[in-house]
Image (tube, rainbow, N blue to C red; front, side):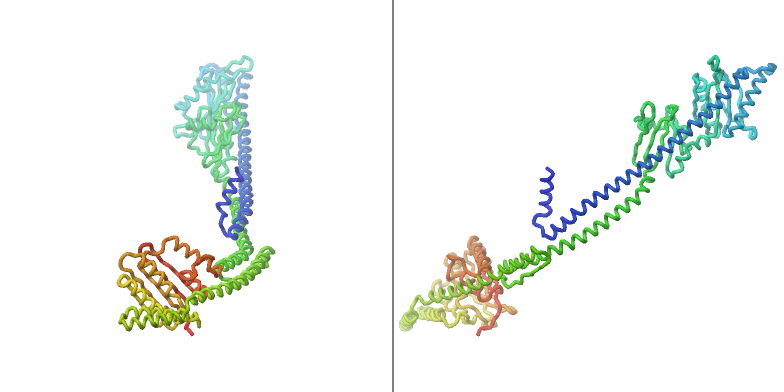
Length: 609
């Protein structure tokens, strides 16, 4: 199937095209297709490699973030576990009822405060640490002693968080983000129950309010890339962290969140790469399975690295195309030029110009052999044409002379003189004029001294012929003449105009109903003689006109009339003029059936001897 399609396509593109175009097209296709394929594959592989490197780099950064993330919350768990151990080892109870007269309870509170403040000061990135009883009542807190900044713990967001802590009955660390004061200061809050390891009962729970910057430091390695963003989203769709801090605490689009996390496995171990219109997005589940990390890298970062490779590839391809184009053109021109020159020479020979010089090219052996063979063939054709031309010339001369000599001229002269004398005696002037005109025509036609005469002599012969025609057709025939006297001294073949006028009368008078007109025009235009014979007769039928055109084309090539052609008439006149004037003769017939015919003859103005 494919070879047929390729073959059909090549036929459409190359069929009837010059050999230079075919060779140029072939060179271009054979060379350009591999260049384009190699360039495209190179660019695609390079782009894919860079994209994969960016992805691998992102995955490594995300693994680093996950590791820091685990360590971050592991340290919080350690602080919470230390507090639980401290409570159990010192037999401290988390009781929401404080009786200041009870020395034991007051000492418990003081030890709790000491531990909370020591933990607060040891880390340096806490906003506050709070302890609650198992019933959810506030016990104590630690805060910055230098600023004594007290935060509002009764906001709606904090009450929701306290309720989440209260409902966390498992020994599990939970975390969230919410505003910690009226100005909207965001903090990361983490909480874990205080469990008695001996009884397994929950004694209460502790809550850590940490500065958001300490949590943001986990994601900074990824954020160092311009335009890159990373976000941490809870299972409920809340943004726990975002490169754009203004987005923290907001709820993401459920449709987008579902699409982003849809392909993750239940273990969350598989990273999912999704590429939207502008970004490469990587999604993974955090180790505690309570949140998802979504990173986004602009494709422009990848493209900026690919641009240099793309530009180099395109530059190399363009230079290669220009080089291939130039070399293909030069090579196709070098190989095809001798063939085109030989083709032009053949066309000249086809038009009958056998004197055409045949270019001999040595650019390749085949062209040289072809040129030499054609040159040899043309030489033989010239010799054959010359021989045939001479034979035909003698043949036509013999035919014409034989035709003229068929009647004994002396008998005709004497007979015509007798008829003219009787007509004068009987005073029948019309008969006398006709016989005198016929006698002059006879003398003119059978005079064998020369076939080339002056145009004036040929027109005189036509006038004698016109007189005879007028006597025959009377008023039915109207003869018009427009003769340029400057054309009279120039050469023309004898018996050229009379057969053409006779042919015009035959089709313009005998077959026409009503008034017939025959017009003879002779003019000298620059270096040419132009003769026009026009009639308003029935005209040539289409087949006869096409036959004459075929005859002209064949005679232009062979220089002789095909067998069976008329010996005296339209074809004979054309052949005789063609022999005399060669390619300088212009013989045209314009005919419309039912309207008439115009014959125009144009040949060089050569003075008669």
